[in-house]
Amino acid sequence: MNQLQIVVCAGIVPDPLQTLEPTTGPNGPGIKNELVLPAVLDPWAACALYEAAALAAKHAGSKLWLVALGPKGKLQQVMMTVAQKVAFELVPVDGPIGGFPDAHATAAALASAIEAIPGLDRAQLLLFGGWESASRGAGVTLQLIGERLGIADQFFGVDQIDLRDDGSFEVLERVEGGKHQVSVCAGAPAVLGWATGNLAEPRNNPQIGMSNMRTIMPALQKATTVKLDANSLEYVSVNLPKQQRTTRVEKNMSADEIAAELVAWIGKDS
Amino acid sequence: MESIFVLTHADESGSALTKHSLEVVAAGVELAARLKASLTIGVVAADATASANSIAKVEAKLLAASGAEFAQPRFASDAAACEALCRAAQASIVLAPQSSRFARVMAAVAHRLGGVVDTHIAALAGTDSVEASRWFYRQRIEAVVTRTARPWFLLLDSGTHAAFAGESGNAQVETVCVALPALRTEVTGIRAPKQDEQTIRPDAKLLFVAGAGWTKKQPDGEAHVDEAGKLILGFLRASGASLGSSKSLVDQGGEGNSVLPFLTHMNQVGQTGSTPRHAKGLSTCCHGEEPHVVGWRFIGERRAISLDANCGWTRGKADVVYIADAFQVMAKVNEMLKNSTDRSHT
Image (cartoon, rainbow over all chains, first blue to last red; front, side, top):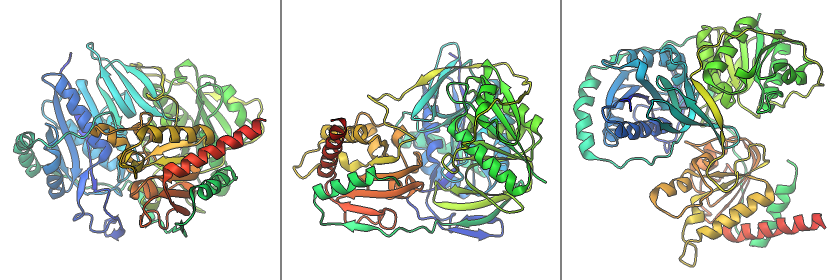
């Protein structure tokens, strides 16, 4: 079996439990106090990272890089946790945080960072990431990176990959109706945008953390700083949804009464 | 002066457009009329002429990438087909469905044409220009965007427009030659998730969301996971509803707890799940922001059954909250639905 060369692209996003409030600054829209909100590795990208690490562990000699764009300080904060999960080499790109910058510019910056990875054999590259982010949620950045790197096989909504001894692999992608499309690809290079996959989040391992941090801190110090072009993207408005419903709270209805009301409601044309 | 190009694709039959494609055709007709722009429609299908018959009466030029190579949704062939169609159409605005097939390729196609792409578009507005609404941060923030760069690709979410329903006819289709790259991927089939029966039904009127409370200890001090599973499946069968789940319930499988065997991550709604569109939603035993805010953004009428009278997440989000035991209520609901079905059969 070939040694794998896996690059995982992952952004950082506000912890899902945080309340988000949009604000507009000199560089366009953003999230109020985004730099001080607790951040996590983007959830679907995190699934991609865990799947990548599991694959790399099965194939001796494989290499795993994590390419992440964000403010250096914020990346360092998130890496303190992520580094304890699985072994990887960080390729940080110092740039703006959030979902409002243009995806094309983000993809260009990440593709350049991947092209500059020393020792990366792009003919053997498996480019992983989340199929969508929890910030912009567009599902285009990874695809644009793949296109820039000239990768002609791309898969999105991936929940499973089975590597074969000849280097080919079977991949399951989510399609409409709660089903998976099954494809067989001749092998790397390929792009795989992951959905949730099948692995649970690995437990923290301080030893892996210490080992990772030896390379993460120097990498963060040397991180390239990028400015992202707007590519003519303009925000006409950015708002929190205003719709609030008048909620009827029924505390004293019996199970029979509730059931009768629900059955009538279900049967009624809306 | 804008020119509009609507990209569509066939369903599994290969000879009929998907409903989502027809929704985007309707959006394209509407936008072209509003901007007084020309309209072209492209079809990617094994049999594009047959597929295009349902839109034969649209006042638009019809282009097609047709052949056995386009029967399978696959990045290399679909990207080449869409690229060729877009080059032939020479349009400034490209509309396409946010289907799994086109979401897989359209950013790459935009890049090849030197264009830009925005996805998950929920609405198109603007009088002289095009303004597109989409959500950020998993449906927590709504923004309206516009761009001057062209071509501008816009992928429309399903359910945002009514499907085009014009009269069928014999479509006059211009076939576009597609230069295919070496194909290294073969689609070998479709696999349903590992479960006893399909519980995800995108076309269902009702979304039933099961929360972690179904597997928690009940007043007798015991968990009743088997009973919960029977009640939920019984309701899905009787009502034809689609099943969604909170993340905490799906995740219990990975934590060694008792789980509902028919649930997978595919059922999950919310932050790392889907944000489905159904006319009605009924949540049961859910607590937290995920099911009530993120996963329910596009649900029309919303009701909830919860034991927690103080659950703040339902207030202002659900239309009705019943403070009750979901086990008791759903058993009664199933009984009533069964009686109603039995009566209609006799």
